[in-house]
Length: 254
Image (cartoon, rainbow, N blue to C red):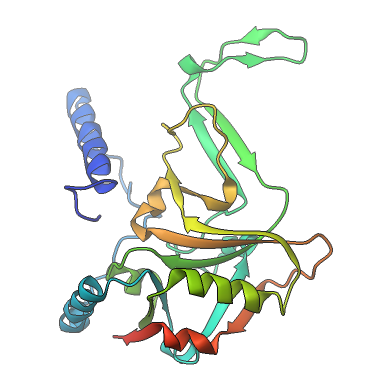
């Protein structure tokens, strides 16, 4: 959780407090193991002094983007762009694994009416699950738009790359990718985090490529999305070497 005096953390702590009060009114407690599947930060006591120093450096230098990873790759300016579908691999940890091809909303039945093929209206009696899916796989490069020391443990990283020119990085990433695949579209922006129970903007379908469940909001992800051309080779991972990135970035190690 970030600074609860500012959004989005302020909004989250208010919602969490409402849940606690509702449970209290009902005389109930949170269910057992309700944090199962959550990316709970691991304590990194042995690196506490270094983490404090890195946090200070980040607050002073204010990098545009932060890429967490392994020193052996980041020190060589080696970056990986992956297919969205590959993030469902069971080998990934809970901070990394997600279905990037799908979004599921859980609608209040009082706000929904289902119409049959014959035009008959049916009022649902229980939660209505609405699934949005993208037909085409796409490539993703993930980084963070805000520095948070917990990402070292969440992503099993021993280093991070501070990127000080996000536009130049985007241009060079796209340029290097053209040497590997053909693509129709690309975009880059902060990810939109959505509460599947109370999504904002009713009636607006989520853009799957930049949508993520609210449980990942702590990551503050900045995402580069690349949609390959139909018929283009679909490698699971594309490894890029952008040597010029050293001109506007800084490797920070634990």
